[in-house]
Length: 127
Image 1 (cartoon, helix red, strand yellow):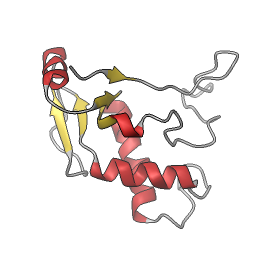
Image 2: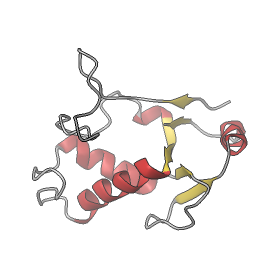
Image 3: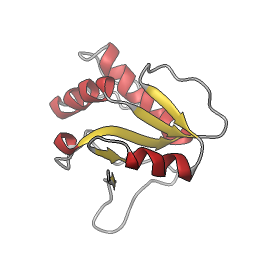
């Protein structure tokens, strides 16, 4: 059975987001946990997916330009994750979304759908 694996950016003092609700203190959004070899799919909620798709699409489309969200150039690790994300199925848990820009995006509607994903053959799923 596939596992759901999560990685989260959190400071030593427990900070996860700034006063506006954004993780604006994070320097880079690349996967820094060494999980890429053991995963072959990603699972996100619809709110997270909207920003995720926008961020990684910007890197995919213009890898040599500063990101509109941060004003910084993508790091080498971000470029690597952007390539990985482009080729990897993404599942979005949502009862309302019906379309996404990425062609490998699929929608799951319930926890039962997620349980079924875990039963399918493959590597682990990054949450």
